[in-house]
Length: 324
Image (cartoon, rainbow, N blue to C red; front, top):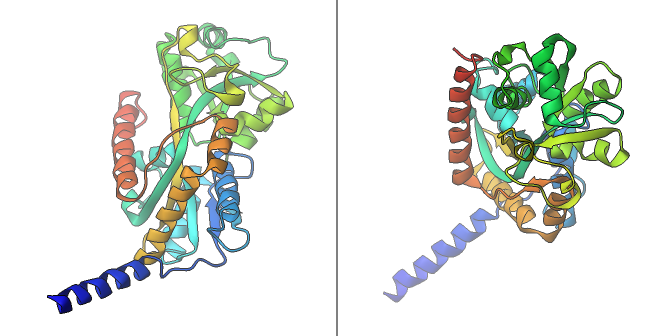
């Protein structure tokens, strides 16, 4: 019996050591869009927190790989970097949307490993600071009266999550044919807001974290937050769509995936590291400052959540005619 117990202790120690056998180096986070958007925010803020908590050595490199609503980055990871252990990739509801609609040709969620979430980013609809539009009903009334007079910019491709959010809002506001809503796609929220400020479009659909810098600078005014109730922190002064009689909620989860052939040791390390980031006081402060709501899922739980998200978005896309 003592011998068996001794062997069990050795096995337990070996298992414990193997769980932490991976040591990261030259770490990298891919943001699948140009600088300034939500994926860029996720990589940079989580990367900084990983460094502050001594979970990665040195600085985590952020690589912006824009194109195809995240498809270019997804294809590169699957096709060229599928066994790298020091690589993580920012993901969100936009990623799930594109996968749900078959927009990443030949790619599926099962080709990568899903690490964990770091919160949910509620959607916002905003206009330029000097716009005569001050409320969401006013914007929707203009769309109903003259659809061609209003273009709405977003950081996802046509049929992507930013597009879906404004279509759902329009439907709830009484727009009979949401296909009339003019949506202009850009590679990331930062580029979409730039076009709003240039006067090329009349409104912006994106997420709270994407809008934060432009809100702070006073360049845009948020006319609706797509949350069930007002957010805390810096976004507490902005009304929800519900408050204005338009019952729509649009939550964009934020998290990470990893190469599909990443080793189990590396995968376990990143799941644990992201979990520690989420639980830290540093991240709680970042969440409050940027309008992020709680969403704490890692490993298998997160994998199941992403699958459920993809299934529900597929159904929604069929309902509004984006997917047959």
